[in-house]
Image (cartoon, rainbow over the protein chains, first blue to last red):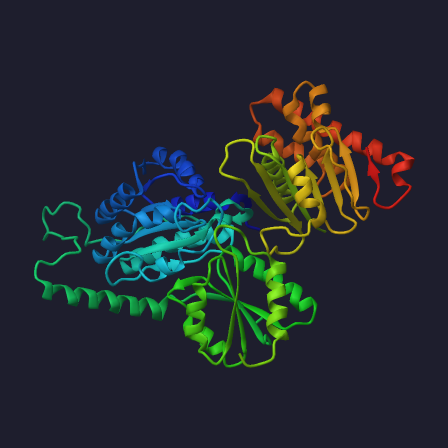
Length: 354
Length: 194
């Protein structure tokens, strides 16, 4: 039997980074993810790794750029306002095709908001977020185990595609404690012949996101989007719960999907055939699987911690002839299972037709 | 077994600490556990909650909306949580700091003078351990010995503190068992013990 430990979500992210062979961490404190910095500040320096608490998120993301360009597995972690500050650097990294992991433990917003959990950065994170044409792989954990596993996966995918990867968590997941299995450490890191490591004895490598001649840049963007196409082909991930006979499908990711799991159980106990569709990558979004589901299910209930962002992707997937409703909380408060159950009942009690 | 326990109090009273002890002990006894702390941006004085779900099955929701047991360390947590408790559930109130009386008769309420008992033991700050002992007496979700085992690790090297905590845990447990056993408290459903 595999040994389990009780761990908080933020610690699981930090430990996941260590296990994945993260060589350099740069970050600036912000609740509700401070435990990541705190933990890494203890774990990394004695282990021959770089830990640096920067003077700002801008410094952090640009140091990640530098470390990634030098071929290191590099990471930063932050929460919503800090994620906004990092957008310029993330855009530069996407443009320069640099692999890095950015953890966003989302909190209430807009603005300074509050330290509760939220999912209001969905658009920002899944559509690029900074300037220019680019996309980020977005992994959406819903348990402490996934906080660890997806952080490890994030490093792997970042290197595989030479693209920044976001672990899109929320404040509730950062704080919650659950038993998890500690994964074996990654022992072999991939070769990075493109990295800036000193050009003695070889042709020089160039890392930038700039071309003097405007006509030289469109081909680079095209290459980026060929890469994103491959990501959409290969990396779509999702989880299904009780969907085989479901006439109503809840779509949810992150901490709120946990409330949805309980809501499914409650509804099933009352004989209502409900299931849960949980994207674990929100970019690439599992459009195809959801479109497929819409052949059999007519009602889609989107549960999210924002005023309605995930719901746009659900509508894109299921089309306009399906009923799509929203049950949500926003601004940093949780959505509970009984509220989702009430929304399920309201939706199925309405006559067909919108 | 399936218990949903919500602990509430002021920041600084040690609510998160006893939540963590409870979760860690339940985990080591082989149960599924979710321990969801919530707190404000204040360093001290804001109200703090900790939801601890203990089950034999995989746990869905992180938050508890209908607790089977509640600990109210301060007035704010009592007023917020009283209505939410499941009928037949347990409520442990810190009588030292909460002057209010519970209105519901379909739950079992115990009023424990946690701060006074802690002060008698020599340190007001172990009121959290007194009330945890009391909770275990009415809601035996884990063995008290599991709590002390976890505490031994968390407070390794702090022998005095550990000894005091153990004493406070035992005092809360014994006081509650003794007072629950008194005939008047068994006379009606929804017993109120003071």
